[in-house]
Image (tube, rainbow, N blue to C red; front, top):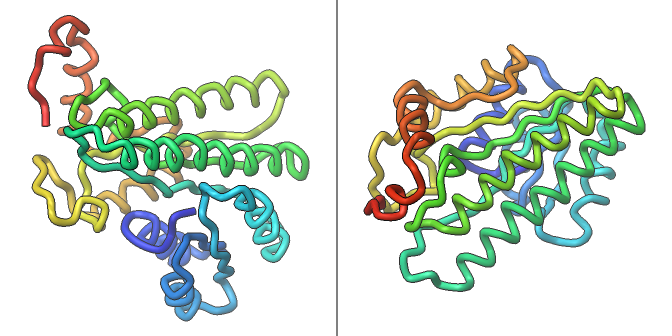
Length: 235
């Protein structure tokens, strides 16, 4: 989900190279068709906007067309720096990263529960969920939501004795269209990040922060008390 550009596209192509039959979803049909043209017999496509009411039923249609699903990969997301707190940006971020995320992940979970009692759900969240970030309030808040939601589903799967596994992937800044036109510290090449994401999924990692620089940063961020954090100027 979210295969039309950036990391989502790179992951789709990587899984295809590894021999997967893949279903690619996103809002831009032409971008999906470009992936299908690479291997028409191994690529299924479906135009899906995760924020729309019909998104879950469209995902189920795609799964049926493919003949089943073993791995659901969620790479759809939205967010911008928003120091002026422009309401449309805040609301669109919540709509995509919380509502849309929930729609699709729950659909995948229920499919695995009903049809297989097993499967893997992998999601791209972000290191931004580590702390509330004044420069991007809804983005950091929704990424924390994603962390917590996956944690809750992992517990639910265990409660219901389901073999549904989860991988929460937390990159930092990645050189994709998502941040085009802006300059950020510690920006990583997209190919480098995709390689590490695919490795994490192959190894069945539960959580992974990409890469070591961000692991160190997040370690220190977690230990900054709130009264001090709220006085820092981080952009």
